[in-house]
Length: 262
Length: 163
Image 1 (cartoon, each protein chain N blue to C red):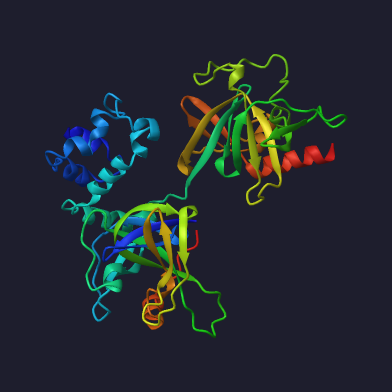
Image 2: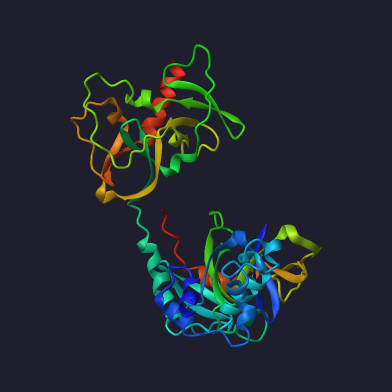
């Protein structure tokens, strides 16, 4: 039971509160009423008829009351003191050198964009072509939450599509899943332009958000001849693949230039 | 509008969640001599020292009981500049220790609303709301400290380093 009591606590608490919580078993007699979620609730046999109203014990006032009672006691010794240290340190712990990026795959290339420019990742959907305007970088218009947005081809912009024949096949890639259902649309927006300057482009696969330390970034080799490398600001190794971080300003500027001038 | 609730002297008070910076465990406070008794002292917070008051002591005669549910609330406190100052009013941070700081309320559930009182001795008391059968008294954070005390406490507070 003590294990359960500490399992309910969030993981990031200092160890002292875990020890304190475990050392204080609930009073006999009240156990059944206060910990009904273990007997007749979601962690028990689900026979409680209140579940029909509240769906889950965490919505039930009995559990809310138990949570209030849980905090209605004095702090374990050393707990508050350990927080003093946390409060004083926190400002310096925040590392400005870490960037958070969304990693995705375009054909054989793993690329990333800073999450600051990302609005949403959504399912692939039909793109409406615009006569005489589509075919280049602009693919057409796509409906995102009731608003038509410009849909562009990052493949064409970065020159990933239609590589020269004889291009060496890429090394086996452990992250790659060739499933057309994994295609997603990324919605990006220049920072600080609320609702303006928004672009949508399809990608083959989204791997997730990764936090990268500045120290692990590598410069893009100057000898790289692929045109896509122009838009990369740095490379980093992630789970056996090399990911190129796109320079969001250059990327968005290029989209702008291609679509407005063609 | 979301409200953070807490109690003092058995009564429920609330402030707008918008002005809340953080809710923390009630860490030990370094006492500062010769201040009103409701000013507990200063606490180190992210490389700065911020003044901390005890809400129960401010509103009633008792200090807050020391429990896990008694927490330290960090709020934005509008800094009073001298009236001829050309700068726009900056904000400082104030710590408030209060009891039963465990839940929030949404003010869509407001049943009845009484207008703010205008009491000379307790200018920090705002509107009174009736929410889900409980009576909640809103607090006006910038009036929790008398003007001269606020000026004294925050005069030396350096501006937060810009990110």
